[in-house]
Amino acid sequence: MKKLFERMLGRDDRSANQAKERLKLVLIHDRTDIAPGVLENLRDEIIGVISRHIDIDTSAVRLEMTHEGRQQRLIADIPLLPAKRRR
Amino acid sequence: MRESVGSLMTGKVVTITSGKGGVGKTTATANLAAALALGGQKVVCVDADIGLRNLDLILGLENRIVYDLVDVVEGRCRLKQAMIRHKQLPNLFLIPAAQTRDKNAVSPSDMMRLGDDLRAEYDWILIDSPAGIERGFRNAIAPADIVIVITNPEVSAVRDADRIIGLIEAEEKGPARLVINRLNPEMVKRGEMLTPEDVIELLAITLIGVIPEDESVVIASNRGTPIALDEKNYAGQAFRNIAQRLTGQEVPFLDLERKDGFLGRISRMIGLGGKA
Image: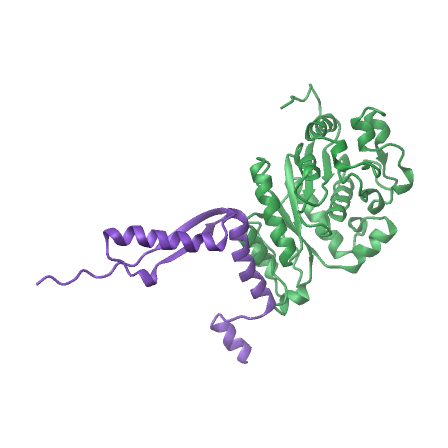
């Protein structure tokens, strides 16, 4: 019953699910030959460049690899800070 | 690119490969060859795993080898002399690998020439690729019209399959087709084995067959008679279904759980009209 409940919440810790999640990540790196650390450096540089021009929420910037079929894609999600109120 | 010279038949070259070793390439090659021959097709299989010959053993032809692939390539015999005819299936032939040489004895262009020669006289030319991503693999896919990647529902096999699929695309031999071998429906049900849907989603290629794990496959190999020849066996049926799909027929995927069909869902997913 507990297991069923967890599964409904999407927390499936059975080994097949772990295998799938681990493979998802490892295949992205295998396919692109980009080491996880490279993405981290890239993120920092992107934050640096963009925040010189506009106000962004630097703590919430996300940089991720996704794929559609066998095509890999780099996705940057960069939340902007609200404009400061003019007086 | 060579042009095939005015031949009557234009057979298809199908290379069976995997990345990881031990996932069932040779067994799959032997069984697909047997299943195609059973369906009346003229088939030759080529063991391209030079130095690690095994297709002869799975087909039960190990005692009849005189010449091999390297003898053909190096001109020590004519093509016909290296072909061994199967006893029960008179339209099935084998060109065995050399056992005492290595992969560098053959080049991709040698294999392309061989493929062209065989296309003229056979409906299907099945090439059993060695494991790995090096010379032997490149030899095996050089003449291919269709590449089948075989994997097990297991992390290292899936990862290596992904590598090989990328290389097949880079060589412009894609899109590869996927066979999932040794699926254990009981473990899938318990959530302790990747489902065929998981594997398809991860690898993003088209599925052409799922073979259930079955001890009778080992027994058939022990005897040297491919399981595809056993009419009542489920794994044999799965191989015969792949052979039919290769020949362009639409065959619904086997319901490996027999009751509640997760494979039925896959069939629908890839548009093959699964059975209920």
